[in-house]
Length: 242
Length: 101
Image (cartoon, rainbow over all chains, first blue to last red; front, side):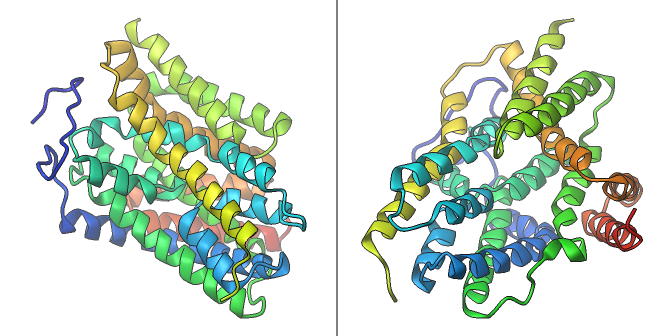
């Protein structure tokens, strides 16, 4: 076991942490519930992609290479001829900035992985898989392939749903009608309650909640996740020495 | 298989930007040697980020969302099963919306 606080990353195969098929399988299994709601939203994306006049190939390329729901929906909104390339690319970057914070949170677990495994897994990191992964780590799961297994499951759901949604005429025009929009919130709530470690979490969470709510009112897009998450975790760090 | 070249460039640009955000956070912190303060910050990220995702969704929703979230949380604590907790949340929110609460 490596000493905490001293990250060492190996260049080739020699991982300092566990990373194998068992982890992939565990991550995949635990992501099946969320994969269904991802699938529902992928269908919607496919339908909207058709309306924005993306070809089947273009829709699949976007879902497969970008693989970030929120930014893809925003991109469709901006997708008019002549294509505002720079605006779409920059907006995508801003909408996805929250990933920076999530990746930082993986440090303790991923620092001992080879570069290929760490940065390969990170391609598949999405909000839901990241949350499941952090919750699994908090529970004592030590197989770092968990994120990859979860990410691949969500990836397959997203990609196949994009395909069906783009081909087939709208089946699920309004997922909110069936409460499916709440599926994501529900999963995050369920994971959050499992992360409660005691009183020391109260202030950071409270600050994160208040700042995020205010940011969501005043700022566009997903800024609120980054700003709320940063402020809340800073409060946790500041209070640490007390 | 129709792919417009401008669309292809745009999609590749989006993909590159997104991957930078995915890899960048880990890349930066894995290169820092961390003090106690920094370690404490990283430990607080998961809870803070999840709270920041959930809180606006609940405050923007109505009573239905809040009640459903409470039910979801309670079931999650009791059963420790995310699937069951999620299903309960969806059923509750769907039911309450039909009753238009």
